[in-house]
Image (tube, rainbow, N blue to C red; front, side, top):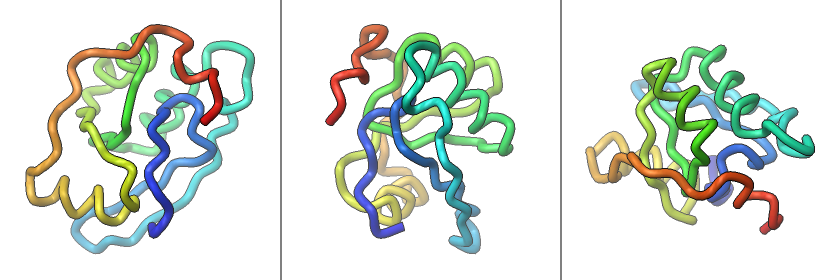
Length: 111
């Protein structure tokens, strides 16, 4: 929870699923992070399968956004502060909803 938020959704090394009422959380590895293609789709499906209702990320690609929207998962713009800080901002309604995507394959640069 104290780790900085990875700004890349599909290529993030892991996801933290947080129950916002109790702040209990689970860390899940993103097996799609190192894949040569389709990382966003696979990552979005993984998050959807875990029952997430919202995603906080820096950027999301078009394929991931389509999967998240189809699963009725809201997408919010986080910043490079800790995951915990981003969740607290979300709880206060202080995060902007993301409705546009980054170009496909923009997360492959590796930061």
